[in-house]
Amino acid sequence: MSAKEILLITNYFPPEKGAASNRMYSLAKALQESGFRVHIVCPKPNYPTGQIFEGYKDKDGFYKKTTEDDLITHRLWLWASNSSNKFLRLLSMLSFSFSLSLFFLFRKNPKIIFIQYSPVFVGFTAVFWSWVLGKKRILNVSDLWPLAGLEMGLLNKGTYYSILEKMERFCYRKSNLIVGQSEEILSHVTKYCKTPTFLYRNIPDFTPPTITEKPIETPIKLVYAGLLGLAQGLAEICHKIQLPDGIELHIYGGGPEANIISKITKESIFYHGEVDRIELHWALQQYDIAFIPLTNRIYGSVPSKIFEYTRLGLPVLYFAGGEGGDLVEKHQLGWNIPVSDFDALQNFISNLNVEKARFFSKEDIKNKSIKAFNFKEQFEGLNKAINDL
Image (cartoon, rainbow, N blue to C red; front, side):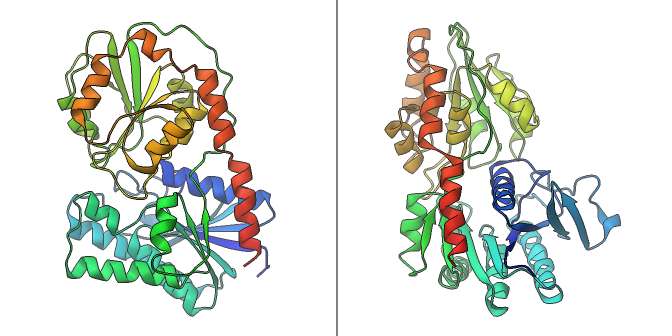
């Protein structure tokens, strides 16, 4: 195979939606434009529904190879599930790990392998086989599992947790380069290995819109768009927070809590379901403030919504803690409310008025975001690090 070929292994890829899918697609296209012939290995699309998408079902068998946007895509079988049952979710991850093992054993692959670490079993499988076969291994760490699972209450310390920790540290030690989306992630990684690291935030790659400034009037419209999962906690927020007259919350997305949110009957909360990314970007420009919540502070997590929303000109109401809140404050991109402090969030919303909402202009937010978070400059650094391996 050519020295300019690279294989990207990811658990999420279009036509699936979401930050992880968008991140890997943007990276794949940037690598392609820089001269690489890019191969993608991913499961048959199933996220977030837990059902294989139409057009990719069992009639295609164990394996389906396609060329999509000039990217050579290898889609592998998995037993799809988005069940809240931990055992069923584990079976789903293991099924893709099994398919991935067969892919490594029966195909000749490029010398450079870029691996999306999370889920742990998938990352471990990819690192193990690429190490055994003598490939150059780049590990992309976007979440610190199993630590993130512990902080979200999804995992408890014990034998299973210890096994996951050992797998995590094996991945760090056996990689040639570790790419992390936050300074916290890189700090965590360097506790366990001497592998070179590179900060690569999940910055979107799209042309920002022309901002048409219009006076903010009541009702002031807050918007959330993204995964509706336990970590985001939108259902709890909707039940706990009282929106005063003149404040609305609009919600877009799908996920485990979508059914709960769709049945909320508060007059000032509106659920719009899922829309594609292009339509969503247009819709988001109609709102005044973007809302970014997490139920708990997750070490290493920096929600990519910060970069996407602000590039569209939306100031953010940040309720997720950690490094993301520091970025919002440092670059003056909106308001940072202490994570899990519902009293502080309620106080902010209760006192939100037109004058306060007008504090940040959309054009100013967009310009600050473009200056602070530049995809092309960031990618040039990563591309050099890959070519230096």
